[in-house]
Length: 254
Ligand SMILES: NC(=O)c1ccc[n+]([C@@H]2O[C@H](COP(=O)([O-])OP(=O)(O)OC[C@H]3O[C@@H](n4cnc5c(N)ncnc54)[C@H](O)[C@@H]3O)[C@@H](O)[C@H]2O)c1
Ligand SMILES: O=C(O)[C@H](O)[C@@H](O)[C@H](O)[C@H](O)CO
Image (cartoon, rainbow, N blue to C red):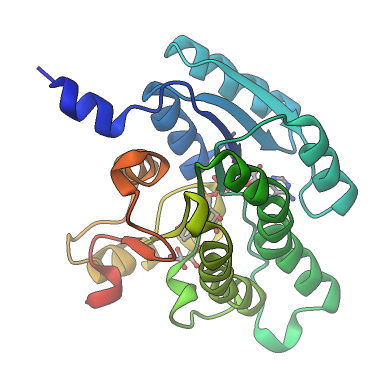
């Protein structure tokens, strides 16, 4: 049975979380995990039907959940999320997109949309919620990076640019607000089987080749991120800030 000590260390009771990209993949699992640890959860994504389904699933698990529909590539939508979300103790910047083309073929529109979703939205949401968390003396920001935060992959130059910058954004946000109780960290996944990676999964032999590049011998699943998210969202990680946490089955060191 879980001791009161462990319950206190990992409980998110009384916390309120905003999870972008929470309708799908890794973001949904993070929302469910921190919700089941006690937090109230607000999901942000574009498609209302997917958001509605995710909120229904969360409620089936006893999680207090709601959603805001927004296109995070659109700054007016980002501002509307900031204005309507209320107090947020835990911000998870999970929403991401990857426009896959050879570097020289990415248009400026591809580049700008990719940067807007993967980097500018986390920047603006952090700028709104970070100081408010700091004023209350407690907060957590979890950004989603990628192996491309530290190394190059083919055909995703704009995404790689944004994900490398996420590591720098995390350090800058940590520097700004950690002195007042706000820990900011990046989760770096391996290759995870989600809708985002379906184009890569469709390439012959690619799934198997990537599985072999993980030390654990398999690709990631969304469920692999639950434990790290609960850890980084709560008091257990009070002395962890500005870091990249590699939840990648050993991919980065293989
Ligand atoms: N799957 C992987 O292998 C992998 C690896 C490294 C990093 N990541 C990162 O993890 C995060 C989650 O990815 P996933 O694999 O779970 O993908 P996913 O496609 O399952 O989920 C992405 C989520 O982001 C939302 N989203 C995308 N564009 C949006 C926009 N313009 N406005 C609002 N919401 C938007 C989608 O609605 C969805 O909820 C992303 O930041 C991704 O870059 C994934
Ligand atoms: O969109 C994608 O194809 C993924 O995000 C990939 O880039 C890798 O899975 C990731 O970089 C590993 O962390």
